[in-house]
Length: 364
Image 1: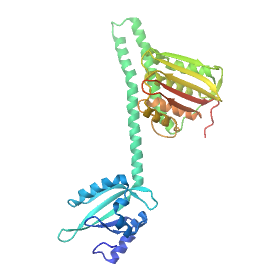
Image 2: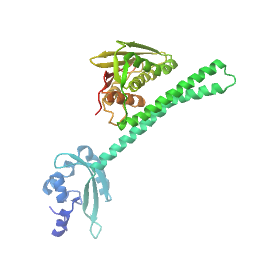
Image 3: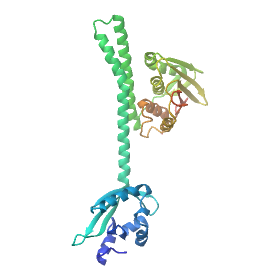
């Protein structure tokens, strides 16, 4: 089928154009499909004329295409719309459909001429960029939230220390509190930086021999201040405390401390947190349970999926748990271990289980 008033030579030129050129009647019925279009769609000109655009466009995009076409034909005006079009192999590709009205000497619309441009890679890249920007914004928002409490505590303590009416014993307690909050701020910022460092898989692990008891002691010492500040009870059970691990002790202690801090911050003041460590089938198993807010089923699924990712994959684990859980996940995975989460639902507490080989797995 050929569009009206076009000579054979013009048709030959149109067929030689690498772009996907098409022509419709004034009413929008397909009348010409150049060779590039026929190759892309796998349809002949007759098949396309019979099937129309709705057979080519993804069902979810038909309404948007119809709406754009309806508004364009009312005036008529040129229009452009991005839709997914089915390629000859059945795959849907994002394409930009542009249409230009053509009128005769009297201004009467005679037909439409348009181009179909494959913009699939551009769309995919844009989606990835939006995802990265969204993750960045969520991470910055989480960081700001995590920094708020220690900064408020520092501000309050500073005002008491400066006041001449503050007793010396209170002033000393406030100085201790300020030191603990500064340590907490350091851990938060270090954790945030670690997320970006581990995104490039450039963390250097330094393995050494450490007993299970010593590893747990280092972990508990690092979170003691936040547990005491919230008047919480932390119970610790270490089975076979003399068991030896060959790991980066500081990094594993950091991973455990992050999970304990999550348990503390998501539990009420005065709540109970339990840490249990034992050896099972060549793995050191660390279990952290709390009686806190728990995790809804849909959010738990997101968290578990995030914990299963490798350190090379970009993305936060779950909004509201901060960078700490992402850091723990990456550190555990770099050791060849796993981390999982469980909760019976909101208000019913949470349980995180970290498994790390007794001898750190070699990194490829």
